Each structure stands twice: as structure tokens, then as C-alpha cells.
Image (cartoon, rainbow, N blue to C red; front, top):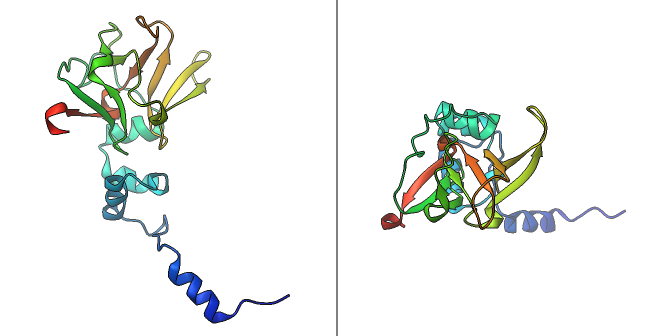
Length: 169
């Protein structure tokens, strides 16, 4: 078996992209990845805990929820885009928001299908469908009791989202 030449190995290492290991990643490097919209899945939970508020971290990464009728975005009526509080992924538009009378911001449609992942959730009194962002953040749940045309109700935690008004986009 031949062993690679040290020079060839060094040349290969020179062209490979340099990445910070998860153990070495700091808040600044994580914020850079978020800004660039890449490799966010490599951000360690310990760094997310430093970047997010305690409520955001509990909801996004511990699958928590906020009490009904307490979320800051529940009554928001401005036009714009809702992005995830951590990875900043666009997930909902104000055009698809409605008052479901449930106590959480509700949407009848996601903004970009590739940015939302649906998974079965058996964690509480039977099966529900969990709504995750494309980078793994827990946002809430989706139910099939919404308005036409989709009949869907994406029931989402305010602390899982940030709102970007149309004027700022």
C-alpha cells in the first residue's frame, strides 16, 4: 500500500476550506455563519445559548412553548416577513397570518416550502406535527383546522420568530 507523499498531502490541505471546529467556534464566528446563511447546523448549542435570549433558546432548541396570548408577535399587523430567531431563515409572510383565536401567531401557509420541515411529534398526548426550520429550530406545530385554501394552521411561537417589515427588506 502506497502512502501519500507529504508534499501532495500538504497541497491538498492548502486547497481545502478552513473551518472552525464546533468546539472552537465562538459567538462571532457563529454570527458570521448566520449572516452568510451557511453551515448553521455546525453552531454548537452552547453558542446558540449565548446568542439567543433564554426564551428563544428554550423554544428553538429545547422544543419549548410560550404561554398563549403572551407572544410579542400575536397582534402584529404590519406587512413583512417572519424569519426564524436563530438562523434568520424566512418562514412566513404577513399575508398568510390570521387570528386563529388560539393565543399564538398562526399562518395558513409557509413562505418558502424548503425553509420549513414537518416531523411527527409524539411527545404530548398523541401525534402532532412539529414545525422546524431548515436548520433544525423548533417553531411550533401545524394542524389541519385552518382556513381555506390550505386548511392548515401553523401555530408558531412568537419567540421563535423575528419580524422584518417590508420597508427594511
